[in-house]
Length: 172
Image 1 (cartoon, rainbow, N blue to C red):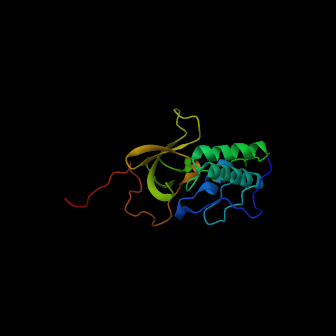
Image 2: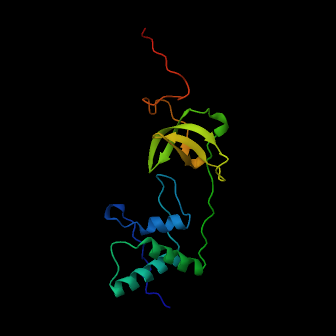
Image 3: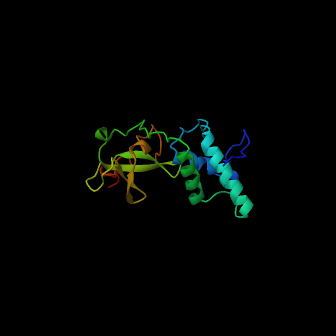
């Protein structure tokens, strides 16, 4: 099938308008960037598959503001058939769990915000993956090591430094 994709076609990526097709496709292909960096351009095969899919949906009268996850998965499948290879996931940062004490305050990246938590343990027997177990908002959570870090000085001052250390009152 010959695609009618224009040479300068870009997959929509406008969070304010609810069009996050490019962000989802980058996630599926492991084309992630660090905060503050410009996102990489999608390969031509992905853009072509997206254009053809959205054009076909438009002709059928079912195209909305954005594609559904199923439709985006089909775009990825079509691009993979054309030879697009997802990047390998690389772990650039791992939390040094051997330096952390149980109950110590840590910072986790949860729902795109830094939030205070307390370190419980690393690599529990119940879990096969190398996850860090933290106490956040009253519940234990299994977090990837690259989403956990030690707090900077003065960060979250209203949170206890260690939940295992008793707090003594100076009043009688």
